[in-house]
Length: 508
Image (cartoon, rainbow, N blue to C red; front, side, top):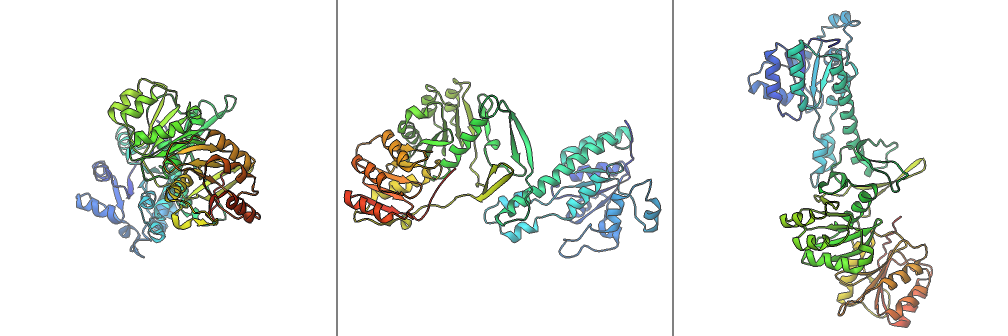
């Protein structure tokens, strides 16, 4: 091994104390002196491991509720000093060299995952001294080793025992890991603060998977995880099936986000990032069947998302048809056995998670950022503007439909009853074309009142003229057109009920 440096003094200051006592004990057995801070020092002393506190080294107490502990020249000089250049300065100021720095950071990411965490609580978990020591040690890897991961304790101890020090190659590898760690940490903090408009935005991405290809075979693609996040499709557990493709990830994400709108047992089936069927029912198997039957032709080769465990009955049905992906919180044992008969089917187990607060869209040379549309619709939001009034069944159908409509590409029209979609017109450049497409696909279910939902206002009465002969009696839309009165008059002419929500749900 080349460029071995002996380890004489180590500084230990860790938030994650996994294995730290045993590590410190073995350092002491190797006659390596230990400096420690705060609770780490208390733990070592309780374990009867000899160590000096930072205060003993600096002659300066921890102040400001522990916010200032290690930010002192006798600490950072000991870490940053170049042994071949700064020896005289170190002696002049009585600075001793620190050869090994062991630091991990306040649990900021874990803190902000907790429900109802306040901004003040989150800010208190932003580590300052830790990243400063990590960066100092990593910068000076020519002379100093930095450990940020308890999994590296054994490797470091083994090398010290075998070579009486650590090699340059090991120190450089540990430094690379340390810089990635602080970058990830800062990226999580930055992401948390994105609710505010920041002058600059740093996005740290970790390469997760090289994909077979992109949307089309001629396109190369990779999947990157946003540093610090555990949400999203890249966190799903794949129980079986071929590797996920670019399109699988996009579609599964769309399906999962839509089905998470529901607290009731629900199923959403997606094709090309758009719902082609959705349903809710007290029995998840029935919800699946209704979602599939809403448009069984479009469901072929689709992505199924469930917000309840997948049952054996659902698995038996899926095993007889072609689907690309199924994603659910969990699976009955017999369901997994049945799905195994379709070895290419991608089976994902996905835990429910709090959605990220914002969403991004890349355009050429720029990134657009907006907060996610997490608005919900209640009966109180429905303003009836026509002479005819919606029935209770129609109100229930409208509230159901709005949850799905939010996830459809504009222009979008959705026909539904209170349990399921029955006709979808999506991604049309003309609203009246979307209406005609939804009507064309409409399947009438006996005894179920149908409503029609639009993701934005009707600019003309032509859509109402198309809707009137279909048997649909209630329409829900945002309102806000210059011709609202003309559209309302058309509804009154046909005896249709129409409600305004004041909420548009475009999606591009």
